[in-house]
Image (cartoon, rainbow, N blue to C red):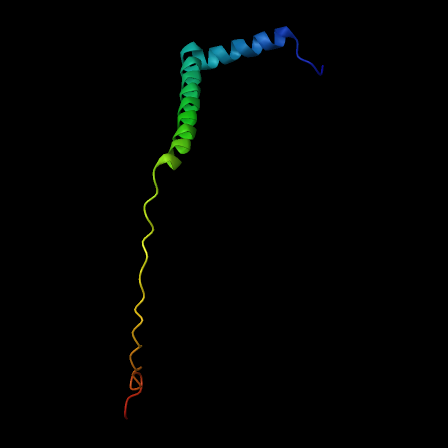
Length: 79
């Protein structure tokens, strides 16, 4: 009772064909194949991305001028 014979598989396949029909199964398999192809194409696109040359690094030059005196009246008001 633990293993399935060939007759069990034939009955299972017949029931699946009756429920889903031949057309729906072939459409489903076509969709699966299309998904695999698009997945492989996506992987190839990821490999091609590093070939693009990198943009030069932009830097900001700091001024060496002396900092201005800090304002002491900010936040304190005469009451």
